[in-house]
Image: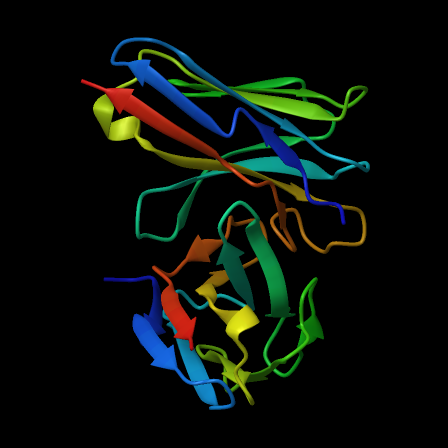
Length: 115
Length: 111
C-alpha cells in the first residue's frame, strides 16, 4: 500500500499555540494535499503542494515538502478552538490521473485546541 | 446549496442484505469517487469514475459494485453485506484542476 503515515496520531494544544502535523509516504508523488475533517462531516481541501515545491502558505497554514525524506508537514499558526478537527494528508502518485485525481490518504491527526 | 449529496446518512443492515448508497453532485464535475473510512485507517478508495461512462477499481473494491448513472450520479452497491463492510462511506467529485469535494458520508452498520 502507498498509504502514508501521519504523526502524531493526536495533538492537544491551547488556543494561540502552533500545531505541527507530519506526514510520511512510501513512493514518489506528483503532489501532496492536506484535508480537514470536522467531526461527523466530509473532508475539506486545505492546500496542495507539488513535488517540485518545497513550501507553500495559505493564511495561517504553512506546508513543507521534503521529497528526499518523503515527508511533509502542516503547520497551523495561532490556533483557534475552531481548528479542532482531524487533518489528513493525501498523495497523488504517478499514473494516478490529474493533479487532483486519485488520492491515497494517511491515517490522520486528531487536533484538539482548547480555549 | 451546491455540493455532494449522499443518501442515506445512516443505515443498519443485517448480514447478507443488499443496499445501494446514492451520491449526486451538482457542480458539473467529471470525476467521482467512493471511499470508505475506518477507525485508524484513513480513507481508502473503493471505486472511481474518471468520466461519465467509465468506472475503475480502487484499493479495496471487493464486495462492491458501482454505477455511474449519469454525469451527476454515482452509486455504490453492496450485494451481500458483511460485518467487515461496517464503515463510513464518502463520495467525492472533482474536475480537472480542482480539489475533490466530499459529501458528509453514509454511516453503515452491518450486524
